Each structure stands twice: as structure tokens, then as C-alpha cells.
Length: 341
Image (cartoon, rainbow, N blue to C red):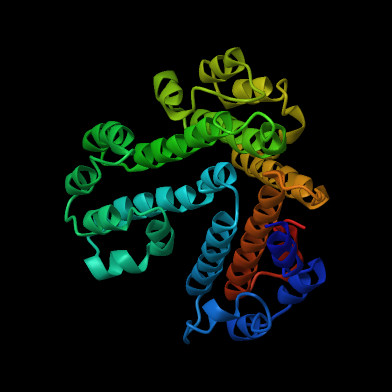
């Protein structure tokens, strides 16, 4: 297993390679420069005209393939935890189904937008395909009523029926995924928890704080915010969460965040949106830097695959940002500022 991780880690793109990619003139040149990398197999299936959306999909398919290989080569307790990476894609699949059903897309169009390779591995493809056949939002929810998402989808549907917005469904699916991070962490063997703690806490606590700040910026009421965030966190007191929930406005909630364990992540910018975006990037950067500094020990622990997969996710983030930037003809300096390096 450690040999596998070491081999995959050696395939990660260098900072120099990423910066070189930001200098490409168009998506044809961008993809050409990736033909000698681990993404070749997926990119060979993409045909012109190239779009950043098509190319982004190949990066995610590559990530799923790697995640499955790592899971298959991991001890059972680690494999169960690492399936979180596939459940993240499943949550995205369900959110996508909700959006495309609302947009009245055909079954074929819906399927083309899903990551079914993740569903194949966690054996949920049949339910997802059934949901893709639905013609209405209610039918989507009913097709998943036997799944673990049943309750959150039912609650979200009540909100949809009231205001016609899918926002609540999106947030509740994200909340459910982060609750799964916490429960999977709790179920790890005691000796493994220290190696997973940083990753789980940054993911979980970051989601809670950023969701509360976004909610405050959009003037969501306290009851909505309580519903939107996980009940358990790692380095955030429940009193801190309640203070942010009941804060009078965004600035008041931000002040509370600036006094918590993650104070350094929250620097006031010119706007609330920019403040939140910078904080989100700070959480991602903290994860990435922690993973980069990790050393593979002689004995397996869950920190090894978590460090590698965190770096792999950062690489996918970087490649997606570059492909979008190249397509939109964004200047090189701005593209490079978006990278996690």
C-alpha cells in the first residue's frame, strides 16, 4: 500500500509544470501538454471542440480512479474512511440531478453529467439511475427514499415546495456529507485518529464557519442556519456556533469567527463575499500545506493516503482553475494566484 501511494505521489505535477500550463494559449495546447501525464487516458476520450467543462470532468474521473485504487489496497478500517471521497461525488451527483431535473433535461443529458464510476464502486448506481429517470423533483426524492439521504431530501423538499429554490437541498446534502466525515472519524480505531484529525477537523469546521458566514451575508434567519450546519465539530465550541447563528449581521458573525480557533483564517476584505472566498481558500491551503509536509512512514497509517489524496484533490483544483482561466483568456498572473501551490 505504501509503495502504491509513493508511486502515485511521484506522478503529481510539479509547481513548475502547473505554472507552465497557465502560459498555454488555448485549451488544445493545454491538453496537449498533459498528454505525457497521468491524465492521458481520460483526455484521450475528449474530442474537439474542447471546453473547460469537458476537461474538468476528465480530471475528476482520474481522481475517482485513483481513489478506488487506494481504497482497494487499504486495510478495511482505512478503506471505510477513504470512501468519503466517493461519497463526496455521490452528494454532487444528487445535487446535479436536482438541478437538471428542475431544468427539464432528458435522461441521457442527466446521465452524462454524473460520475457513475463512483456509484459503481459504492454500489448505488441503480438508485441514482432511477432518480435520473424522474420527471419531477418529487419523483427524484421518492426514488431515493430508501437511501441514507431520505430524511435530508424530504426536509429540503419542504423548503423547495415553499419557495421553489434548491438552495436548501444543496446545503442539507453538504451538511449530511460533513456529518459523515465526523461519524467516520469517530469510528476509526483509536490509534488512527491522530493521523486523520487535522483533515477531518479542517473539512468539518471549515464548512460550519463558512456556511454560517454565507448565511449571515444572505440574511438567512437563525432557525435556517441551525438546520444548515452539522451538530458536531472538532475545534469549535457549540457556544461559538450559537453566537454566530444569533449574530445581528455578517460583521457581527465575522467578529465571532475571528475570535475562535481558526481566527487567522478570517481576514476582513473589501466585501463580505471576498472575505468568505479568502477564508475558504485559507482552509484549502492549510489542508494542502499539511499534506505536503507529511512524511510516509515505514508503517501504514491512514495519514498516508489522506496526505496523498489531499494533494491529488489540490492538483485537480489547480488544473480546473487553469483550464477555466485559459478558456476565459484570464491573464497568467491572475490564474497563478488561484492555484494551491
